[in-house]
Length: 443
Image (cartoon, rainbow, N blue to C red; front, side, top):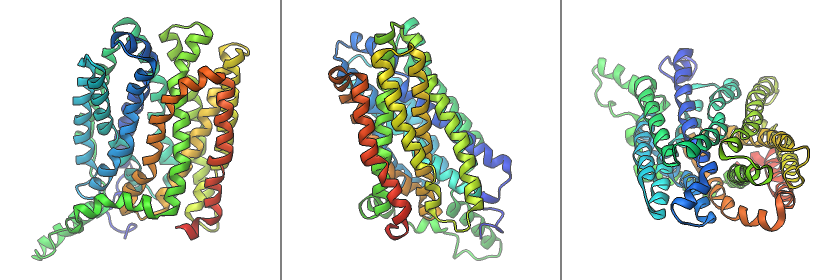
C-alpha cells in the first residue's frame, strides 16, 4: 500500500525525494548541454577535420540519435537492477567516450565516440521520469516536473553560450573535456546522495528483511529476481508495436523534438550570417529559448496540478490539457522567428522573442505528453513506456538537422519555417487531441 508503507519512495521524507530529483536534474543538464554545446563550434570542427558542413551537423546530431536506442535497453534494466546502478554506470560510460571524442583526430572516430557518449547520456531519459513517478504522487507530479526540468532546460542556452566562448578562445576540443569533468562530478553526487527508489525493489527489500527477521527465508528472493531479462528488454518494443496510445504519442513527440533540434542546430548560423555576430555572441541568444522553456515548465506544471486536483473525474487524458495551446504556440513561434530572420525585422530582438514563444510551446506540449504516458501505465513499467514513446523522437532529432541547412538555403528561413508550421498543424496538433477523446479506448 503506497499510503501506509514507510519504505515506499512516495512516503520518504521530502528532503530525500528532492535530493533524488536534483540528481536527475543535474544529469539532465549535462545531457542537454552536450546536445547543443557544439552548435556554435561547427565551423571550427568542419575546418579542423576537413569535412563538409552537413558532416559537421551529423557530428552534432548523432549524439541525439543514441537517445532513441539507449533507453530501450537502459529503461528495462532500471526495472531489474534499479535506477541508481544504471545512472552511475552510464555516467561513467559517458565520461569515457566523451573524452575520447575530444582527443579524436578523424571524423569517423569523433562520430562513433559522440554516439557512444550519447548512449551514456541517454540514461537521463531512462531514469528521470521513472524516478519522478517513483517518488511523487500524481497530485504532485506537475510541480515535481516543473522543478526537475528547470535546471536541464538551462542546458540548451548554457551549452551554446559556453561552447561559443570555449571554441573561440581555447578550441572546440575543450568543449568535450569540460563536459566530461562536469559529468564526473554529477556521477560522484549521484553515487553519494541518490537513494534507490524503484518501488518493487525497495519495498521488496524491506519486506524480505522483515521475513528474514521472522525466520522465513523462502521469500528472500524479491519480486525483482522473478523478472526475466529477456522479457524486460522486449517490453519497450512490445509497447511501441502494440500500444496505440504509445504510437500516437511517439509521432507527436517526434515532430516536436525534430523541430526543436532544427532550431538548436541552425540558430548560431542565423545570428552569425544574418546579423554578423561572432560564435560567442551568437551563443548568447539561445537564452531566448530558455526563457520560453522556463516559463512553460513552471506555469504549465502548476496549472496541471491545479486542474488535476479540481477535476471531478481524473483520467490520464486529464494531463493533455496543455497540448493544444502548446502546439499552437510552436506554430506561432516558428513563423515569428523564421520571418523575423528572413527580413531582419527589428533586428535580432524579434528573433529572440519568436524563439521564446517557440520554446514555451515546445515545453508545454512535451511535458503534458510525457505526464500522459506516465499516468497511462503502472508505476512499475513507467521506464519502459517512457523509453518506447521516445524512440521515434530521437530519430527525428537526428534526421531533421541533417536536411535543415539545405532547406533553409533553398527556401529561406521564413518559408522553411512556414512548411514546418503547416506540418505541425496538420499532423502533430490533431494527434494528442485525438487521444483526449479516444484515449480510454486506445489504452
